[in-house]
Length: 333
Image (cartoon, rainbow, N blue to C red; front, top):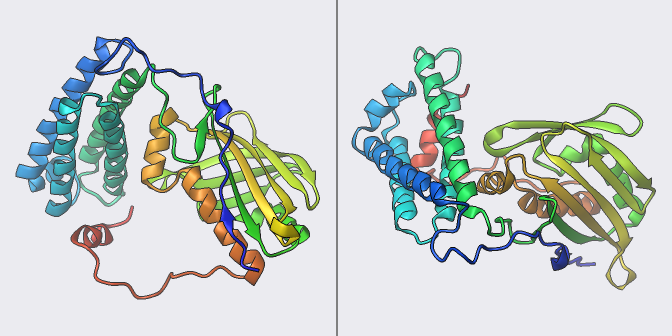
């Protein structure tokens, strides 16, 4: 059977209660303070961008990292484009969110300079603190400019009134419900097809500990409990209090199209750790659930149907770009 992949969205009636503020035709926001802060950050983008473009090696020495002129100039160009967007756009909330994503990239790159063998590690620590402070201001401006507007969520997801993001994805698998259930119920082997997961460890009869990769390779951990386990039919779970990423959901195993195979359907609700800005950063790094789950389901389908997951790891590749070669040469922490 040639099973087909289908995605079904959560009902539109669940959308959040945020509404656009009709009093603002220009920059939506809670107050003019958001506009002033965004403009100042736009000017800061020009200053930082000019410094990175004109003196990339000097800037690299100043922040205690190796001198990568190409990378520094790329960062400078990004900063200048952000400044142009913030100061020139009628509604720059999106540009402010892109600055948050850029800040996350900068923190990831600076993390390389925090290795123990770096003689300029003190300068890098100071640079990390400065970027983290700027990121906090960027997030504040983004939040103020977006106040009164529906928050941005990825296609295929729905923003709920409680601030969570909900999504539903499904795939038809040419296997029995029992086979699909058995493959999913073995939680400790979920990383076989859920590539963002590093480890799932059972800690009790219905309790488990999860370790995942977040944006920029950051590790995210949480504890969860299984709230329902109906053999060959459904598995439900929810995170325990204190989880970095609050989430709950279920996976169901239903008769497939025309009574053939099994339709595996995942329903998930989660709260991004830093709101919609965090969701945008995660999307940039490919670590956002709306991007992960369809890929996970496709790998699950291949695993259940064939017993293995095709991979291109270890295969030869073409010549890397200049930026790619720069990243490849960078020492690992």
